Length: 504
Image 1 (cartoon, rainbow, N blue to C red):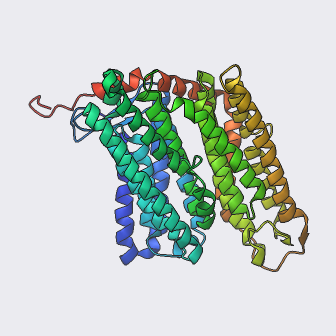
Image 2: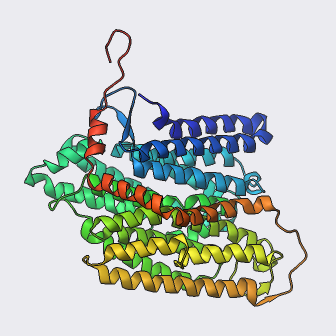
């Protein structure tokens, strides 16, 4: 049995412990050690992505206990994609924090690795209870990271964030308790089998459990009416933390896709299917209005994060294989672009004096060509202009919605939201780069400070250039989700490793 599937959890865990020790004895070593661990994690995740792309599902029996009695980790195409995306975002965020943010408070480095560990665990686990556990790990770390740097605004946003997520955790426990009470298992593959065979008398309870889980995952994904906390919270965080948080809403979308394509399927139990499309479209519409009225660049990035979650949910809610393929293509490009915008917002703000990131007239930035060029690229990608990856993703979603129930609404809302994003970026760009007074004296950003933004935007460009192989991967991933036989057989069929003497 290969041990690589557990490496994305163990590596950040050990790195966090080491960084905690170094904080007391060798604080200057924390940054290089953190960078080394995150770069190594990216290499491991790319390796897992390569193995997952070859087909099949890797199942890892933690503790060498066979499912459903022991804890199982599973790596399929979707999980490998999310792991790689998380590692890439983490590396870019850490490089951005290296300038000064990592020194602005205590415990940044250990909390950063604990956050990564929680994210990776959520993507790898094959049972609902450990999904809850990893949610808690990443949320506890995110509370600390959100407060990093201090300030009343961050404290206020953090209180809302903590309160909402505590409510979500309570509902999550209630939902998994109902499922366990009815089926006697929380292993997702085992649930897929037992829920499908549940007697009609239990269907009502299972539907309630499914709806509770939808509420919890919808809260994580910032879906209406539970997502209005996101723009305030993310815009209050420091830029590197907000960039890493760009993957947090995708954890909620991932959980919705995983649970509602594996467990709650079929006419009796598809409780989420009728709700995903209207919820996604409503979230996208409101987020687009918010983007038009945003008073600062970080807040605009927050609304666009919410819009990307709404777009993904609407795509998942459209019945048909092609819409899910489109969602799997759209997910990485929008995450990279939003994270780049959070980092870029700080670079722009630091050259505008008192106006910082506010979308009002003020002094010109000292590097208008570089910063303006990156702003233009991020805006074109997020608004969905050709030939960038955002255009390819939205075109695929529109094509997937053709002829489907609600397809007209998807076309209308998606096109109008793209137009709204274009207006929002034009308004922001004119105030940041066009209607400006002479630049103030001050330092210019070195190339090292711009590398994380360049890297994230280049990732989006690469997704457009390599659209054909990426689409083949997305098609295979969608097929693996819609026909989860391989996942169920891999998890339930994994056998413990025999020890000396032939006994497991």
